[in-house]
Amino acid sequence: DVQMTQSPSTLSASIGDRVTITCRASQAIATWLAWYQQTPGTVPKLLIYKASNLEVGVSSRFSGSGSGTEFTLTISSLQPDDFATYYCQQLHSYPWTFGRGTRVEIK
Amino acid sequence: QVELHQSGLGLLKPSETLSLTCTVSDGSIAIGGWYWNWIRQRPGKGLEWIGNIYNNGSTNYNPSLQSRISISVDTSKDQFSLELTSVTPADTGVYYCARVPLVPKVPGWYYYGLDVWGQGTTVTVSS
Image (spheres, rainbow over the protein chains, first blue to last red):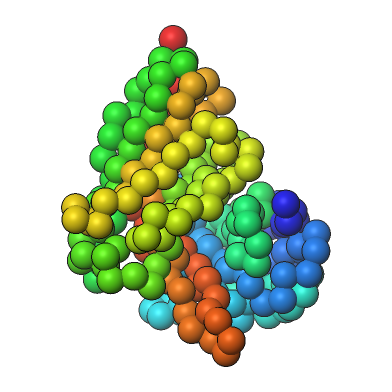
């Protein structure tokens, strides 16, 4: 299985901060990576597909980059709705696997 | 906008079989172009992909669960289903259905991402 390692596991930030979350794959996955946002009690929401493509309806303050084994999700200016947990997922090979999540909390 | 609606019992005793169904609102299972997935989220364990199915019945399963799971599709009812046998308390969590579009590329196609999710079903396994 491809192991997905996210860092940090928790991130404290303030409104307006630029935030970067890293996801590393245990083997090369090209750009077959997605990012999700989940707030407590809600269903995960797709933010980014194919590493850098913004899902329809998602704010442009979210961006993704990377290929191979290292990927980043960046929030350009943190807003109140962005305090959530973020997950990466590889769709390169079965079984599809997720990172353990990065919780973005209010500083 | 397509909706996925989950149904099934969420309270089980150890050794019982979990059965969940996901109904797709727009009839798109029969059309093709999507893989239909089950994912679970156990307390403190993050998200875990369980398996998926295409409308022709072709399946992919997580090897960690393969001996206990079965995913089926009924295109006439716009539904796909999950069965997980011999449940234990370790299977407690929230179970989701979700779809993944197949996007054409040259050559072949790629998996888009889990773009539409069901509402989730809380499953509790307890004696």
